[in-house]
Length: 95
Image 1: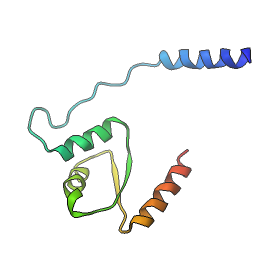
Image 2: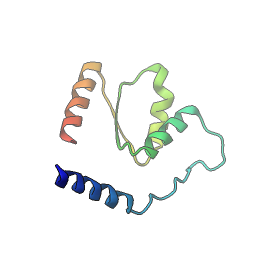
Image 3: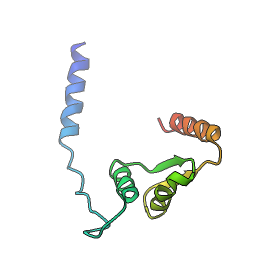
C-alpha cells in the first residue's frame, strides 16, 4: 500500500513539472464572430480532434464553422443510430 502511494506521489510530481502548454491564440483576433465559431474554438481549446455530427437545419451554422477548423475532423453521420454506434466504437478503440 505504501509503495502504491509513493508511486502516485511521484507521478503527480512529474506531471506538475511538465512545461506549461502554449498560450491560446485566437485565430479571429478582434474581428466579430458568430456563436458557432466560438463553440468550435472552445472544442479546439479542449483538444477535440474528431467530432461525430448529425446534420440538420438548426445546426448548419455549427457545421459551417467546423469546416473552417484546421484541427477538428468532422464526420457527418446520415442516420442517428449509425452515428451512435460509430461514436461508441470509436470511443472504445481510443482508450
